[in-house]
Amino acid sequence: MKKVICCMAVLVLLLSGCSGDGKKTFSTLSDFEGQRVGSLTGAVFGQFIDRVIPNVKHSNFNTLSDQVAALKAGKVDALALDKPVAELLVAQQGDLSIFPDKVADDRYGFAVSKNSQLLEQANGVLEKLKENGTLAEIGSLWFSADETKKALPNLDYKPDFDGSAGTIKYGFDTSTVPMSYVGGDGQPVGFDLDIISRIAYELNMKIEFVPMNFDALLASLASGKVDVVGGCMSITEERQKTVDFIGPYYEGGIVLVVNKDRLGR
Image (cartoon, rainbow, N blue to C red; front, side, top):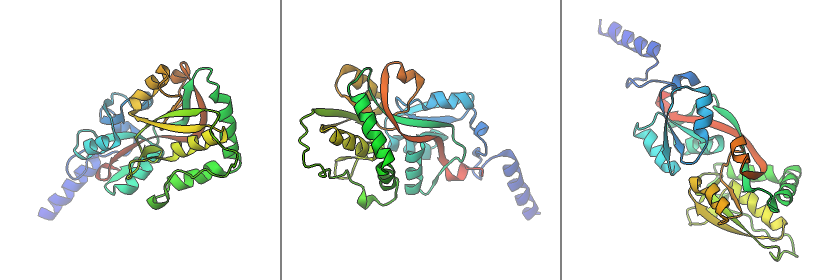
């Protein structure tokens, strides 16, 4: 009799879409309706989520580590992240999973002020990096699990480089691993920083990294504190009203990350 009761209890949990601890499991994007989703402060994830999932309760966090802590503590039910960030996160955190269906496709670019002289030149360099395969090589480095090889390039292949064309002040978010972050030695690193460094070098310009939170990026650009900003910066119609974008340099998407025991498929 006890065995029958136990089997019936398991069946009820499966039919009700709950995990063993009674929490709701997720099998379709619609299952996230009414759930709590954490995003990085200043990101546009909420706009994309609200287009496909109704009544989501949004919470904002300043860093990825704060987001992960909230998810594991049960303060949110899922995290909205850029796909490359999510993939590296779940590789490092064995108790987390990416929900299979993307919330939205996304494109990332480097934001510059309207009518910036950098725009056309930088886009020209970026196209060359795409055409000669360098961009793909950069991606294979930063999206890999081998942390020992992750470092910004030592750009010494142009004997005539002297940085006399000026300096690019690049504002970047410090928590979007592997796109832009601060390494264990305290130095700025990441896929985005690798690309912008090469762009500056090809333009005979020096690069100065200015770390900040994501929500301060566009304001710092508008105030002239920096010349370019990035770090999983989505190219959106709303943002294009006030800034221009170098790129896109990466086409990915927005995904939801959940605790593995709440993934229903």
